Image 1 (cartoon, rainbow, N blue to C red):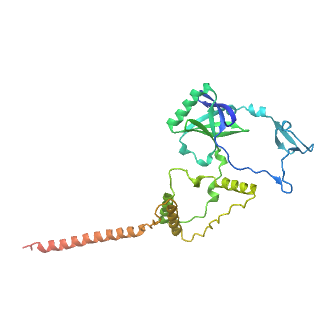
Image 2 (cartoon, rainbow, N blue to C red):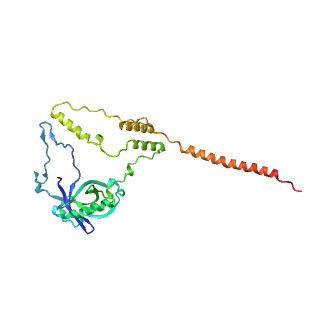
Image 3 (spheres, rainbow, N blue to C red):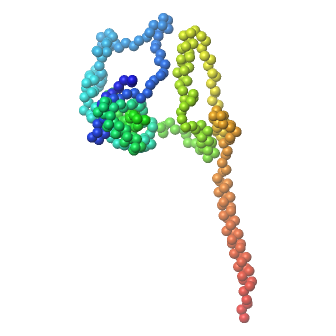
Length: 311
């Protein structure tokens, strides 16, 4: 069972839900240590006081804020746990909003919120049910690790999940990263949409969504442990320079469909140019009034010829 990261409560109006916070993910990455290559002795980091020049134990180490070159204000864990903030003890729900109204770039790490005992079971289920039926997420404030944060509460199956969120001023403006202005044709956009359609799927199951990097590291470790040859490295495909965007899109669609076992004969067809249609309509519009005018003129002449002469 995962360890509890933080204990407190969810504050939902006058309703309080005691909870434990636990990580929602597991890290299966392979970890490395640092070694002295000459004798494979382990390299370790030691915490040394630069004044006394000696290694310190964890009990001797605390936090501090340096507000000038020779002045440090010590801050204890008790100081941080007694902050004059309601969010230091509880996750305070501030509002409920549609999930699509939040830019995903602001959403971070996820944590499961577990009810703390039988007394929390009913209010926990009440909040979970309300979130599920409303199709909205809760925006909350909480204080962990020496700072106040924004959080997003949502439902995942029968559990409530808390996602850390970035404050608006923590998100960089992307305008400085944009490419210079370019023109795209309608055919190129349609080609990109065709490629997206050929790569669309309903789930993320399959070997292409597995961690191939960790598997490759494990194979290298196993080969070196058994003193065998290392696995062969596949030759990576060299990306070519895109000269004809439409040709590249067509080939990409064919490749994606072949990979899915579909017919690779489909092509990205160019759309007819709208200018020609507009010109044709304009010409037809000009001809139609001209024909009507000619018909009226002929009818007027005939009518004039039938009129009797005056006495």
